[in-house]
Length: 314
Ligand code: UD1
Image 1 (cartoon, rainbow, N blue to C red):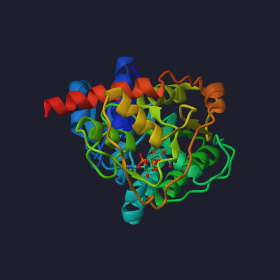
Image 2 (spheres, helix red, strand yellow):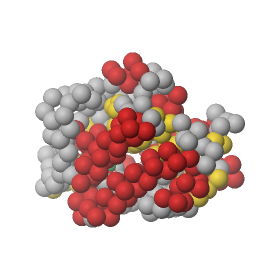
Image 3 (tube, helix red, strand yellow):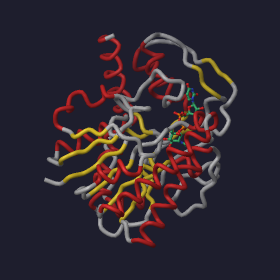
């Protein structure tokens, strides 16, 4: 049985990854300080995991937890572009220093591979679509810069020390367990909650900005593949669906799915906001065997049903 570690394993994406790892028979250690993760996300599997309530800013704790692990999935972070603008020092400490600690601890404990959750935000306002990994990054927010720094460290740890660190630039991941209640939540979770409560959502800007919304199970499948693919040390891959949809389109689709009419309200665009985002997934398909399975409509239906069940539970 192989021992693997998931930092941020109580988070929305991390907990989905933990369930997938357990399903294939791995022994899973979860590291999460519950700053943005929730214990509830792991309730179903709590008795099958090892749980360390550690903070990635604590290097010694990481070294202890990583001993004997073959792969580390590094997903712990404070996500959110607006939060990083409001709290640049805190988010830097976690996203940059914490990530540095994770790579250092991998090295100290002989971990074979680390898969790092990087972000599509690194592309910023690059004009060409879809975004290809060879483009020069142009981060627009502290969050984007912090996540990009992690990629650079992943590369450097591979080149200088031989740590097989691979970065996946996640593109606007959505799905069950994404928390809809925080102002920093992903837009789809916020839209779905508004829909179920029959409220109009707020769209920042004109709603014509677009995103490559990627269903969580597709990202999890790719993350698993990245742990085993050969010759990917130091490399960066887009982890997206390959499509893009505007916010106006998504809100229109959601209203149709529920058979309601709730025109959105519009507010000024958010600072640091990217205009368009879409992944070129050629490299991920070629090197990692990426094969997204979920259309936006299917992913939205599943997420909607999960949120509906959550609301019923109260
Ligand atoms: C960015 C990154 C993404 C990263 C995420 C972490 C890009 C392209 N994507 O997502 O890879 O994982 O940060 O948080 O940079 N919006 C509304 N109404 C709302 C909430 C949001 O209109 O109530 C708008 C935002 O202004 C934005 C879009 O929806 O234009 C998406 O926002 P959000 O879900 O927060 O993600 P990004 O900032 O795109």
